[in-house]
Image 1 (spheres, one colour):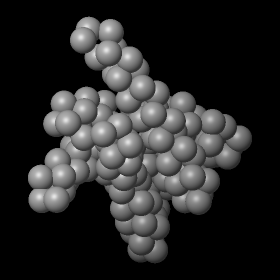
Image 2 (spheres, helix red, strand yellow):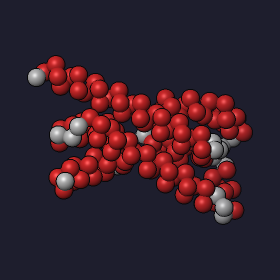
Image 3 (cartoon, helix red, strand yellow):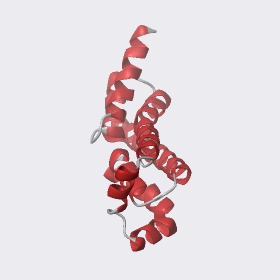
Image 4 (cartoon, rainbow, N blue to C red):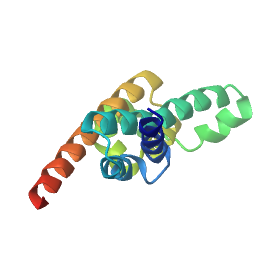
Length: 144
């Protein structure tokens, strides 16, 4: 049991770490010998936690007028309109490629609401994790 928890924590931590995220966590977890379901679950969990932390922290920070005005300077009305129109689809496509840390900060600065972002980022991370894990499993089966 301790061995499983140690491996699961490793996958979770790698998934949490920026720039590694699911692209390193899934192969590492499979290399550690975890089953595909555990690898997907722990890597998605680790990769999704930063989205929650950043959105909640951002919502807390913008309560301060000076910080709100500073962050408001980054987002033009045109960018806010585009984020409202295409924010969910952009989140679905770009979160795994740009990273959840960068996407969370970017969409919050441009004014996307937390709820749609969190749902879209979770779906995106989960879809990419499943696809990546299946491709790795198929690829490793090809060589063995």
